[in-house]
Image (cartoon, rainbow, N blue to C red):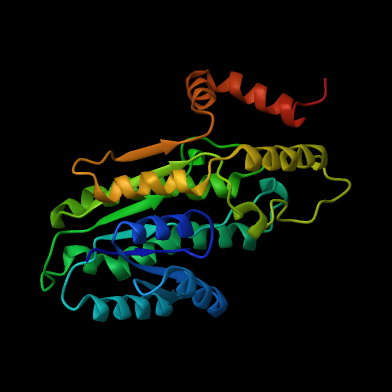
Length: 283
């Protein structure tokens, strides 16, 4: 039975991916931070699901979970690691408390690094293990290729994930371990609600107060039209099982708009976004 580790399995993309893999005969190890979530998922998913209780920023806990998975594998390789756990911190950089920016980077960037270092040997870099080499799926975002205002911390983290994944893919060729990016657009998940889209308190005198209100309305609109997590899970399944996977899968509810925005001159896009959010300088 092929086994996969998924970080951030309690809700959203992680939950949908766990269910899809289990339905297709995989054994799934899914990380959660709360015992209540571990108990709930075990009840929902059954015998082939094993909850792993850790925070992705806690190195000792991640390493302990990797030892647990190694023991369960019984000398076989792990088929996949899905680095999904993440948060979204929002707010203008000039007003964003630095500890919140650090939290964004710790969870979205350092977390996947810790997971790769802990579970990477189980994917096949450890020559003592037997079986096919595994794959790493890195969950990025359309924000990994573009940067929107008032989400600089999130965009920075996903740009980092893109660069990290590209370098890692080439490093792990030595072991036959592939690294694939899945980059969703708007998805119907609680990621913004979990972290709070307005990360820092809004100062009534802030020059960004109008833009922040408009951004929150826009985020709500996107969450309503977003793709169901199951659509992202389908791409993750493909990344894990296709004989010839792409290096990057991008999936968004509005692919044409994404294409247009990516091809327009940057200065033009700047003005379009600034006008929509009220970020144009006074005349």
